[in-house]
Image (tube, rainbow, N blue to C red; front, side):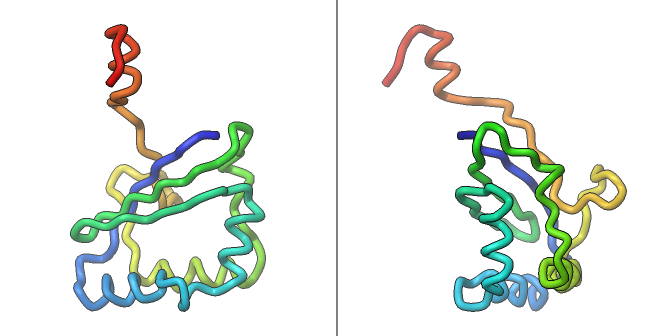
Length: 119
């Protein structure tokens, strides 16, 4: 199992941010989107916000292929178009890229292992 992290910004507008959060409440997410996420092999997904910055944590199997997970069905495309109204790309994102992969720069477990100790 692997954990992947991604970042994306929302438009810096309090009303838009509130609407985006409403769409992500369990009762408002389209069932087809949840099914599409699971069909892609994603075991767990969480999105966190501070200000207008989002961080998405995704738990996937070790053989997960992120490039192969883009849903092309009409409902997923409609959801993406709806969410795009609230999102803005990070300045360093590639053309057409929304969620930008994050790189882990610190792991307590690795630091402890390197020092030969644990808690």
